[in-house]
Length: 224
Image (cartoon, rainbow, N blue to C red; front, side, top):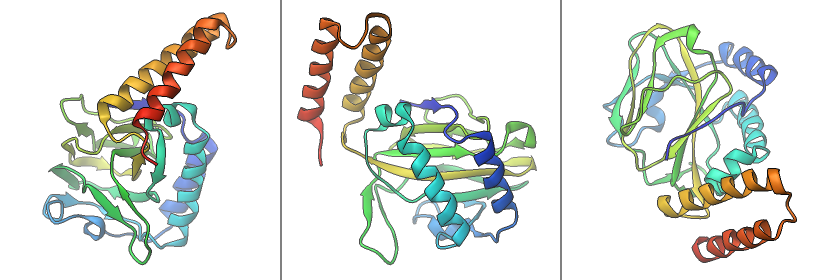
């Protein structure tokens, strides 16, 4: 399931992110590439231990945990600290699949990558190319502050940038529910419950019953 999550960051948060990123240093993006990706990846990346990377990463993590759509779709158990990349003319990322496990160097933090996420940090009018293509989905260039969430097992690529620069944050999520189909079922059920509850109210007997079904399925499928 590919999901567009709008307005993860506010316009003010995007503007501050751009200001900090534009004045920071960048290194070769191969720093976080796996064995397969090293030859496919051509971009720049902010060092993961850079103070700006940590500062903006914290902003993004707080925004994610306050976003009901993200929580409903991802059911996050762990989120890998956000990283930041920059694609300039000629840069791109050939078709690849993300590593199954990501380890934060210098710590014992590691996650199983159930979901991948790209948070766009500048508007499509700022650059040409740079579309994210995941699986059989259409090429994606989202407004600044919007996020694309998709299974980490999906083959995906970033088309070459031909004008301007594409800025984004990328990270991975270990979900409480490992199976993509089960997670999608829970998301669709939760979405239906919220739609019906908006009309009938949370106390409606059918809503209470459906909510019970949701939590019983989550109880069956969750891995904590």
